Amino acid sequence: MKKISLMLAMVLFAVVGAFAQIEKPVTWSYGATKISKTEAILYLKATIEDRWHIYSQNVKDGGPVKTTFTFAPSKDFSLVGKTIEPKAIVKYESTFKMNVSYFEKVVIFQQKIKLNRNTTVVKGKVEFMVCNDKQCLPPEEVEFSVPVKEKK
Image (cartoon, rainbow, N blue to C red; front, side, top):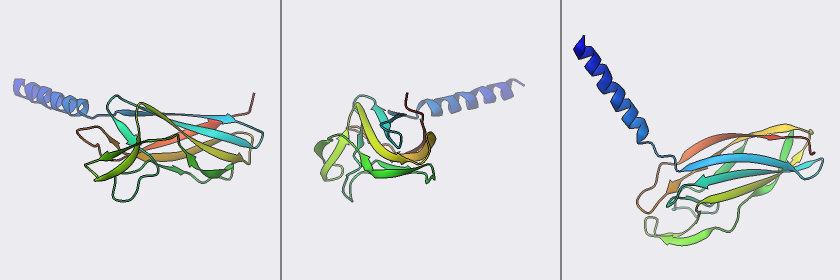
């Protein structure tokens, strides 16, 4: 019985230790503002831990995985233009042997939509890659759901 308890405790510590090693240096939050009866702007905000960065949507081929937003099709709305981003930091990264555009600390992406209904929920996913000066984590996909409500 003691062997089983000891074995169970060792497995439990190994599992907890493995989960403790998973780094999540980026958290996402979302919001929307109606700018008229038929238009809204979605805000897709990445909060990035110190010494980490995520890449722009405008990274050339051969570099890191660029940030990409994919919106689920809906009859409730249509996209107006492309997702816009603020001015990025541009720096040469020897890992990729090229200049890359990236963001640190906080970045807010914006997507304008045309509404076919007063209220809706915009769903989709963002794919991004996060790096620091020592390592890059594998690209990650995060699903999002942004409610668009009546303008007050």
